[in-house]
Length: 254
Length: 161
Image 1 (cartoon, each protein chain N blue to C red):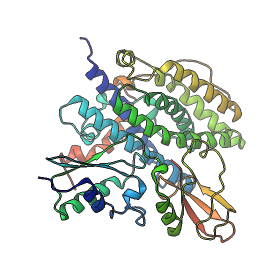
Image 2: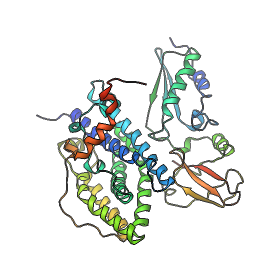
Image 3: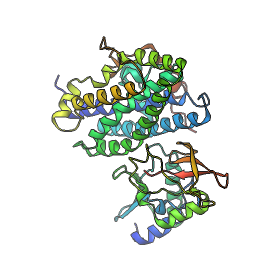
Image 4: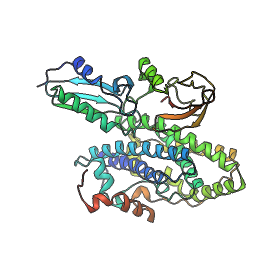
C-alpha cells in the first residue's frame, strides 16, 4: 500500500508529540524528588514546556487525521502499540546522573532538530518548531552545565555519569532512524533532514563529554523500535498510570 | 449578528489581566494578538508565552466571559504559535509595572546568549546591580530567581524569550 502525505504527516506529528508527552511524564516524576529545590523547579519547568509541545502536536495530529480526535483522546485512549516515541524517552529516570545524561542527549538532538524543522514547508510544524526551539535552548544549557559539573566533579559523580552515558548510548541511534514516513515528507521539505543533525549532534556531544572528562562510548549495537510502536516494558507502566482515569471512567470530566 | 468594531472589542479586552502577574494585561504582555470581526463571528487570536503556559485556559475563559458580559457574540478564541511570542512585544509601560511589582523586567530580546552568559540584573527594589542568580528557573517558566547582595532581598527576573 502506498503511503499518502496525510498518513505520513499524521505519523510524523504523533512521533514528535509522543516524544514530548513521554519525556514530560518522566521529568514530572522528579517533582518533589529532585536533589535540591532548584532542580525540582527546573525539571518540572521543562516537563511543562514538553506538555505544551505535546498538546500542540497531538492537536495537530488529530486535525490531520480528520476523525475528530482531540489531543486528550490521543494521549489517553491510544494503546501502547500506537505510541511512536523513541525508546530513550520512556526509560525509567534512574539516578540524577541518568536523567541528566538523557537530557543532554535528547535536548541536544531536539535543539538541532527543531532548528531545522522551523523552516518546514508545513506551516504548523514550522510554528511549533520555532516556539519549541526557544525552550529547548534552556533544556540543553541546563543539561550541559550539569554534565560538566558531575563529569568533572567527584569520583562518585564522575563514575555515575559515565555509567549513565554508557547505558544510554545504545538508545541514541534511534534518534536518527528514518523510514518511508520521513522519506516521503523530506521529499516535500516537510520533515527535517537528519543527516546534518546527526553530524552536529555528534560534534556537540563529543565536545561536551570531552570537556566533562568523560569517555565517549564506542559505536556498537543500537536498539530501536519505539518509532514503530515496539516498546520496552516501561511504556506500558507509564500508560497504565497516565491513562487510568479515562480507561476506568471513560469521558470523565471535572 | 456582530455589531462591535475591532477597536471597541480590543478596548473591552484590554482590562483582562495576566492571571499569573495581575499587574499587567494580556494586551501589554503581547499575548493578545488580533481581533478579527466578520459578519458571523468575532475571532480573538491569542498566543502563549511558553508552550506549556498553564494560564492559557484561564485567559480564554476570561476573554469569553468579558465578551459575553458585553453582548459580543458569537465569539471564538483561537490559539496561534506563529509568530512565536517574544518579550520584545512587552510594552515599556508593562516592564515598568513589572518592576514596581517586584519582578525585574527582561533586559532585551536576543536571548540566545543570555542562557549562557552572566547578565547584570538590576534589583527591582533597591536598583543595585550587585545581584546573584540563585536558580535559572522560578515559580513560573518565564522567570528565574535572583538575590540582591545589597538589600538582601530575593527577587524574580522575567527572562528574555
